[in-house]
Length: 591
Image (tube, rainbow, N blue to C red):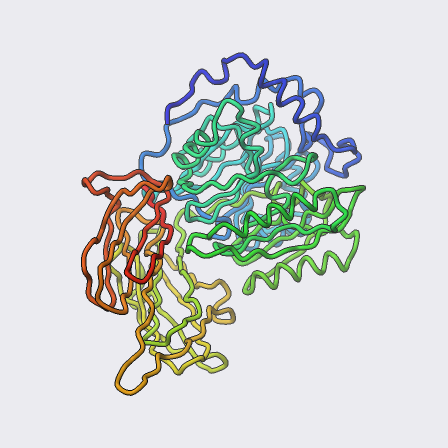
């Protein structure tokens, strides 16, 4: 992508008129001091009337840097973190002291404040019993507490940890510069884009799929959707960028006001009463989300959290929560104790294995915990990516479990790691199976022995590296496990065995680079074609076009077209055509 170095020197007349109209329409009915948000050296979440006259100053201090030269991966919020970024405004932190106390037992509390404010911040924390050994002050001037919106986004590029900084969508130069101060403090590179964006309007799954509202397009009127996607891909490794219409004419229009990825397969969405003005737009977005597929090629599991009225037509913002390692911090509104309790129960049901904690505060529907706390990911994280085994239709053999283990500490896995543990549902103990390295880098496979028909098998995986980091999938194992039903074995009639239908499996790994494995089964000999198409439907590679024998077949695709040229990152589809039908699946190539 070319850099638009002159972008902020262009005439702003059209842009200012557009954005001024937009932001004036989004100002809340209550004034800042009446919102219950902390006063002091702290601007509100929305733009003030004075700031609306300075929209042309947005991004003036920003200089876009080249994107990382190597493959980029942006980790999901639920991946391991070693710290959080908050801000002290001279009076308070914008979140309850009890929440900081809880977090300080697990991670570093990186605290933005000025040198003059630091003694007060220290005294406040010390008096609250916060673990001061886990507090690190970062001295700088900032304008507001919204560290999520103006703070940096973690990335890995060729295994190295770094940060990405967008142009903050407010004319607040001190906030806009904070990411670079944080990068200096952490000793990691910061890559600056020229995209106007805010962190609360971005959620991702760690596999190159991300979501935002159409605010991202409104705030970048000189860019096309394709331009925005290119920035997201270049700097964050996002190859599937889902932009949905926002649900309301008012508010800040961030996606964290009404939706949250809980894991690779689950999206939590706000639910309101049918007579609420946002009901129709919310349900329309739910219908859209139900048409999308996750990184494993299956529909998302959409779960709901009811959000009742708190102020006038504003409702609770329970989706504005923070996932931090094995805990979830959920805003409480204390308007209705039963509704607060139900929200916590919704999280607990959707996220087994996590400790779900509720904290009250001066929170609004579009301003709560997620807005004010930003996770700092573990630069040496140990991560397991596991596509859970699904219920089987045919119980024909052993059950293969394949995982990817990413050891960012580069210390290597301990001998005998990773391990697959399995059992029949309700039985104890688990049976360990040593997993062996697969053909692709960092992949491991273990087989659960074939069991009787229609029984439920439970399993989890565990890995440990030589830095002392350990990880299980699912989180909370062994109390929380994956499970699948074995299905029914093929039956026999006389001496013949009924043929299984042909099947095409999801490629692995996915996303992939530089190559991936495609597996399919044929019930009988016949002519077969296996082709790859790009997102526009154009055939880019033909892997097979011949009479093929019955049985399992495995093909490796190296991401190149039929002429041997390397294809660009993006979404591709592979299609198996046999004499009895056609089946296709989606895959993602990352360069």
